[in-house]
Length: 266
Length: 290
Image (tube, rainbow over all chains, first blue to last red):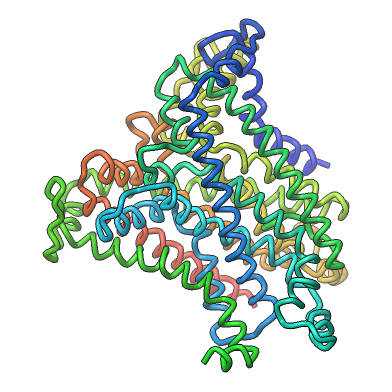
């Protein structure tokens, strides 16, 4: 009983910052503090006319979509290899691929910056950010896809091959439909991580900033803060929507693979 | 060659794992090597001098500011880890042992949602909660518990610790939860049948079996927190800056990338060394018990 009280208090602690977001997004005052002064939708209207924000959002969407596709492709390779095959130094290789999960982001950022700018003498572009985001998203994709691949019965693909399908078409026709919910869920998670990532994007973005880098810039101007709150409210609503879809798909994928849901994608 | 690879199970596995493996090799291992190499070079405005030198490391040792920043960073990361894991354990325990099994996924979903929403804005909102005119101060003033706003909760190390502990909460809960889920419940019954009470059963059976999850939680919180410069920048004030802020400044503002690289290497080595000591001590503790 007391544990339940603690758990609810903990959830309140977790949600406290997000709960404040819409309150200040609709508050009719330039200063983000209590007491509240009145209701307004001006800050949302200001978002609509801000063209540099629109550019930043477009940049972020492009980066997040490419990251989602590429990291999920790499994740599929790793999850399938991990679930279906035994091969030399498997645990070592798998651990190595999962390592970016614990690597501090600033280390990823500065080491890629050194390689791109100082060693190869190339300019920074959206692709440098995509390259880094794929690195940090792949372990998350693998963790999600493992759930979909691990309990797949290999004999189903073998049966398809016995009936005359090639190895690839057996994968496409039998396994792929079964793991599809996991794949979409993995893409949504990678998309969400990339869309929100700031530490790496700040180091690696070229002339045109991503959305978090643009928000960071706005935060220096107190007058712009209510606009940031409005933008944040939209972002939070959007991520909750995407994550709910991802979670529902993940559960459906588990059900398709015939596994009891143990919950959580990590 | 290709035929040979695809004909055996091991070959097919290696072929399939090679894209993610080479990706990690090219974009993680190679850049990490490059940054170590780079830390032995020097930079003069835009020109990089590639003669091997220990000067960057000498600077780090000789100038007290770097040692102080590193010490403070390790202290903050350590405290954040302790606070996060200690607060997270009861939640993981509650979800694993007291929540109906068809509700567990929902609880985990609720716990992870705040983690996926804009990090920058979440950090900024802690400023709104802890600030001079913030939620806590106005709340406490209104109910008359304090006469003037508390100032020890913003723009210092405390604020950095609170914000980071919030940001890393799910990272600590999930591994502990997974470890707790794996515990065979009949072991707990056996312990109680053999005369241990509930508290002793927890300390002698549940906790040691949950230790792998706790260790994973400690590592997954402790190591990445050293690399965060957003929270100290926004919440830390003048006295709350950490080593990651210094690395960022060296790279982006001061144009002394080799010194920044050396600081990054030193920070990485410190957290890795501490983590290894922790893992070894934990192993010895678990072995000593069995």
